[in-house]
Image (cartoon, rainbow, N blue to C red; front, side):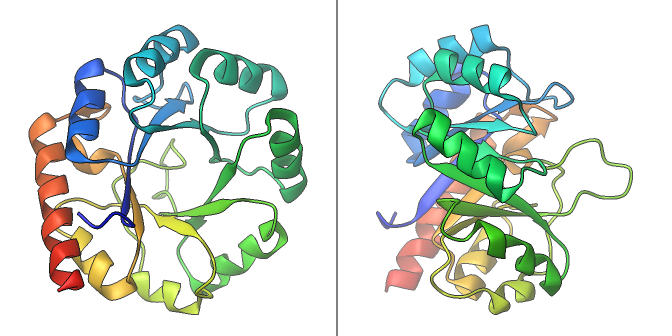
Length: 221
């Protein structure tokens, strides 16, 4: 796989799944700290999972409108490389978090129409990276990990110099389309490699990486 193509597998909760994503060549792993999510892990579990991963992969903590007390616990338990803020955190809050922990922040945004991209403007120069996910379906309880995609044509309006990861409904059946259509260099996947909500499937993980390798190699050629 091309070295400049990054893959983040999110919502990990077992040593087995961590080993599988590392073996597949993932650049990032994500742990979810949101109690409503089936992928939520406790601080105690996060500490053990992070220790198991060691320095083999970049570790991302994913939180939703977490206060300083909770973030303190996450950082102490997990020692993340990146803090992903997946709620309605303001640009000011992102700046506070960066200052408090001295860590890069990836800010997530829900996308369903072109005007949604305008919401990133106050965060430019503050957030180190963006993650673009699909807006949750009506009635959904989770801000992400719902297994739905958004219209990728919307991304044509995004300036080329904006660093981002593409998320939302990705799996082995459509990631090639994303690579070819958007020239995307970083993807994030969670439910697309699960056999049930919150339960990662090693075979689906392997298939996803195999597809990414094939697509990245074909594009390079």
